Every structure is written in C-alpha cells, then in structure tokens.
Length: 305
Image 1 (spheres, one colour):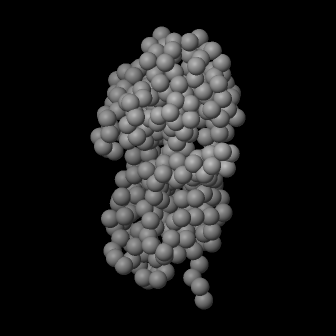
Image 2 (cartoon, helix red, strand yellow; image 1 turned 60 degrees about the horizontal axis):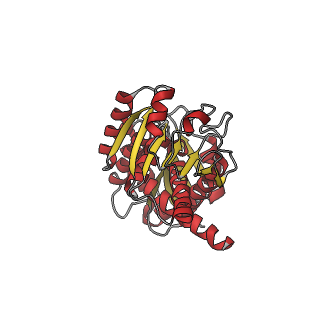
C-alpha cells in the first residue's frame, strides 16, 4: 500500500491559518496536522518525531510547514528543523509565516518585472522605500530587494528609531544592508519618498501611508506597489487590479494588491507542490519563493508576447 502524503504544520500562534491548510490540501497532501503554540524550543523534538516514524522511504512523502506571524522566528524555526534531521531521515520543510514570504517574493518580483519592462533594468541600484517596513512582509521584501541589488529603506510611522532598529535587526539576521526612515507624519513621508525609485506599501489593511499630495514629492518614482486590498488604498491612486498601469500624476506605474496576490497564490501553490512531490528533501524559504515568483512572471510574459 502506498504511504499517504503527510504535512505537519507548526505555528507559534494559537491556530494554524486556514488559508495555509487549504493550500496544502490543494497541493496534494492527504493528511494535514496542525500543531499550535509551538515555540522554537519544541522544534527539535517535533521534527525528530516526524522523521523517525516513517523510515527512509516514507520521509519522501512527509513534510513540515512553519507558519506564525514573525518572519525572523519562522526562519529560525525552519533552520532548527533542518539541523534537527539525521540522514537518511530527512523530510522537506517550508516556511511562510502569514504568507509573508510568498507575498514579499511576489511583490518584489512584480516590481522587478515592471522595471525591466518599462526601464530596461531590474532592481540593482534602485532606491526602494518600504512603507510599513517594520512588519513581516515589509522586512522580507526589504531583504529580497537588497539581495537583488537595491538600496533599501524601511519606513516606520513610529519614527526613525523604530525604523532603524528594524533595519539593523533584519539586516543582521539575513546578511544584507538595510536603512531606516521616519514615516511618522506627512512631512516625514514626503521627505522619505522624494528620492525613491520604487515605493512598496506594506502597512496594515485599510491604512493609507502615501496620500495623493505626498505622492507629488516622489519625482523620481518608477514603480509603486501596494499589498493593501482594503480601502483606502495604501498608496493613493493604486487600484487593487492595477498591473503595471500608469499611476495618475506621476511618471510611474502602479501594481495593486490583487495583481500581487495572484503571483503570491501561484508561488505558494507551486512551492507546496514542489515539496509534496519531491523525491529529495527540499528546504523552502523566501529566496526559493522569489525564484518561483520570477519564473511564473516570465511564463506569463511569454504567453502574452
């Protein structure tokens, strides 16, 4: 009898995301077991319980998924799970806390594609300002963009100290250079975006971080992307369906929440399928998510060429 495909889902939160459970089922997992309020200290024991019970052949049909809401803790949990395995008892593992990894990957990939399409260049050397940059999506988007060669600034409504602390902490954890900017008041926002080539709005749903008036200060702007699907828009004038559509009053193009969301969905689905069907163990985090998002956008561009 063929062994079932089992996914063990660990989260430090009170419940595993129903979204992620649905995605796992649609990717082909037959048995999905959530474990809640799991701290970093429990990962080794749970991982070793996962691997040793299935044998060298069964591990290929077994996976671990790390959820939660903390991007850095999820990375630590994924690494702890990886280092807790003992060959040949090695299973695939993936982290995507609150969808932050796949959302950030999709957002940056969409921006990169728009830059290449409209300006003939990618992210290298571009000044990227991330509004709501201290949250999980903002931090991960910053790391991905910096890894692609951008000069990245995380902006916080709580002022420069909070922004710089998040930039230093995140940059040190993931090995990139990030900078902090204050977005604490309208004047600070205008100053922070004045020299931006790219704006990423990663603030809470329903919070506008860049007004139409403030947007006028961004005279160098090439691309504005917003993951907020709840009115008002995070960046004034960016519609949820916009997919590199001209942004009124600027020379830039806009990328909206649903355009990013489509790429995010495809990215997460493909990663879960890859993990589910892999013959050899996979470890999937936001670099892998970014690679998949890029590949998906290349595919889509080929279909419309």
